[in-house]
Length: 212
Image 1 (spheres, helix red, strand yellow):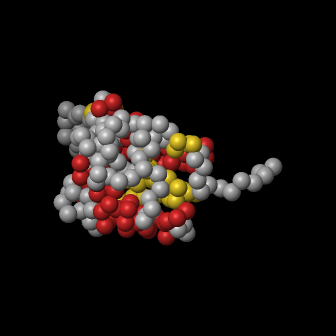
Image 2 (cartoon, rainbow, N blue to C red):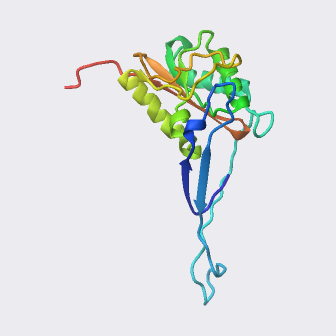
């Protein structure tokens, strides 16, 4: 997606988000975009030129693993998690927490659950911080990566709030409603977007040492 101008995103109604609950219906997000307006056409090298309008473009050179543009693939998400572990030189058993993509939609949560259970025979605790800060769209991965690093640093795993009833298709320890104190060695942060565009970051604690 290409947007020209200045974009501002806000999340509203977060108290209604019901990630991994049977009655979930997705994130409550509102996006607002304001763009640049022009009264005249661009005219480089013309005597009456008055500057250029702003524009943007991008090329996406990658494969999509989604069955449809909005249908995530458990296999693609699992491959992304395995690739992150491989690049980081970590074993699945070393991961003690996953900050999931967890958008709260019926399809995404069950698909991500299948992917996690494919990579981790005994899944670590999982939560979605989107249940607290909403879906920040392009900024979501950065927010969740920061939350994951803080969880590692402080030994406190953020909860998945607004959890009232478990879904049999989402068999995970989702840290329901209350943060958990647990010091772990490494963690993953998942970001899975439309079209099967998957990104997973692996983080590990620096061994305690005297930096003086």
